[in-house]
Amino acid sequence: MNRSDFPMLDQDLIYFDNGATTFKPNTVISSINEYYTKYSANAHRGDYDISYKVDLKYEDVRDKVKDFINAKEKEEIIFTSGTTMSLNLVASAFFEKYLESGDEVLITKTEHASNVLPWFNLANKLGIKISYIDLDSDYHVTIDNVKKAITNKTKVISLAYITNVIGDKRPIKEITKIAHENNIFVVVDAAQAIAHTKIDVQDLDIDFLAFSAHKMYGPTGVGVLYGKKELLDEANPYMLGGGMNESFDNENEVLLKSLPYKFEAGTQNIAGVIGLGAAIDYINNIGIENISVYESKLRDYLINKLEKISFIDIINYEADGAIVSFNVDKIFSQDVAYYLNKYNVCVRAGNHCAKLVKNVTGVTNSVRISLALYNTEEEIDEVVNLLSDYEKIRNEMI
Amino acid sequence: MDDEVKKEIILENYSNPSNYQKIDDGSYEKYNTNNDSCVDNLNFYIKIEDNIIKDLKFEGEACAISKASSSIFTDNVIGKSINDAITYIGEFENMIDQKPYNEDTLKDACCFCDIYKQNNRRNCAYLPYRGLKKYLENYINK
Ligand SMILES: Cc1ncc(COP(=O)(O)O)c(C=O)c1O
Image 1 (tube, rainbow over the protein chains, first blue to last red):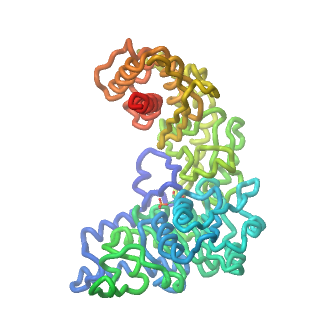
Image 2: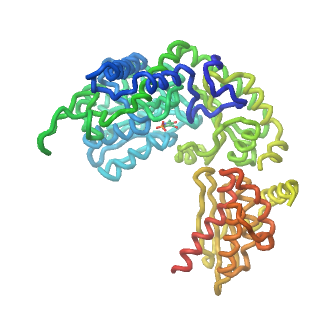
Image 3: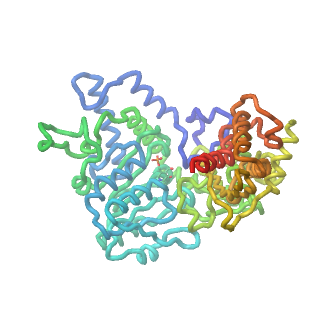
């Protein structure tokens, strides 16, 4: 749907790598252009009109994000450079202070590197332990397995809402309930979920949530960390510098600003934040539920067609996200991607930054199709057609 | 070399690679080469005696291009002195960098003469060369 909103789609290509990043609609591009051409000033320097306008626009986006994920207060919305920075910020600013040697962090083997390595880093620094929640035969997280994995040392559960290889959606609401009964914090990596499913941080009772604008039709280099106010209040600053301090005289007298500015040191990605605001408007205009329904239908359509091809091995039949991972018998994923590229089809091959996945699926790498709202059944037909002829793939993969 | 011949050489070396074998033998040394962009991950097993590469085997996960390239590469390198192997690697680098190169030295490896046009595939073809170059640099400095 809405294909004419996306100038990238004027080109002759089929873009099935939306899990990596999405294309941007005209409204997002023009909002950024407008900032650079009409009111290009710094924020929080409101001594003149255009700077004041920047402040209003920038803070207006904070409100939009707050409403989009139904946070209680706008101070709970911190702008970052993306999911990766958000997750590093939580680990360093809050959990490095809070965790002690011997404490346990629960993750899974299907997490993205950005939700693994910050915890490994804390393990090395603090002597905490990283444990893994077992996955079921579909590589999904079940409540029973979460319960089994919790010990009296568990302090954090950090999970993707939707994973980037399997595309499964975790039962976050049930998980936060059990976690909170056991005084465990829940961190949610929403990078793959934010453009595909409604997220209500209060209803789900999430402690920290991270996502990137560029995977939700917004610009690169900007993202969000949501945290419950009382937790963010306790966290240390992550970076220090202009914009985040109230006053300072000497090393013993530095007064920090309050939330959210405590975490927004230095000139921020103002154009990016404004673009994120336009992306949220864009999604809201269509309705995230409508996007969700449309993408599910599209995924079912794709799965139904792919499973009829005898030499294609689908890794994730069941998934709530818009992701299908598969392999072509005896052909390396990279070669399949290379073959499709000859027909202007963009898919991702490899391990998708989830290098622990191989330990559970036994598959080190795969071809991944990840869909977005502008993809169509016709595009799927074309790609399935290209994938139906084994000899053609073999002949044209080099 | 015409395109059909090149393609045939690549497909043949991919389907039936030479020297594709995992070795568990103390007289060989193992080194690993991998390629970030392409998830290729190959182990090489090398035996050097009196400065001659007596044997070279490889095994692991790789795309068609790096597997075919490793097959041709091992065929070409086995029996060469360390110096000749370094010269051979240099010729391959010349080829993919679009500099003049010696076809007689490269033999079947000439099938990759157009690979510079595709940056990601270029890394795949170069993978075995990069690996041995690094290994030999360490070996000489030991
Ligand atoms: C599940 C998941 N987490 C985290 C990230 C990292 O996002 P970013 O690169 O925008 O920081 C990604 C992106 O691929 C992802 O899919």
